[in-house]
Length: 205
Ligand code: GAR
Image (cartoon, rainbow, N blue to C red):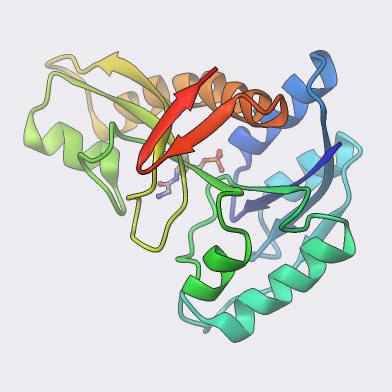
């Protein structure tokens, strides 16, 4: 059985969607820990209510990409059995850049959800970028994490229409509903061993 660790920084709605889908469906994965870099993240209480252990490793004042900080995350994850052999790490609104060392450590075992159709609108405020640019469609992407920012192989995407009267807020809500569909799906596919990586392409069997 694969051990799942979820990293959050705030609201935790994607985390909640993943945990609930695991509870409901027959996903061969065990959510062992939810880890937050912010002590006041709302998602912590939600995880606890759903019976998952939580940990906080505060990152205030520590820049992203810092291996000294990230190795603390590694040791907590490994304490719960999330290892490079049988673990999956899901970034779910974890608003820090991971260090290359962390990414290499869990190579091919870190997923992220991004609120845009990558490679469009990487980085921050993707929904605002989409509205400002005037695209007619946007959406979300689940991808493996590599050493770039939002550049890893794409696992699943979902599209939403951008209407003339959409704002950053209304578009974010539409996209979030799709995020809650595709992130649990991607976790299930991984747990079932159905995701094959071929270069930068993903083939789902
Ligand atoms: C989600 O919209 C997620 O796609 C986004 O943060 C939000 C977290 O919400 N992530 C990024 O922008 C990463 N670059 P949640 O805490 O309710 O899951």
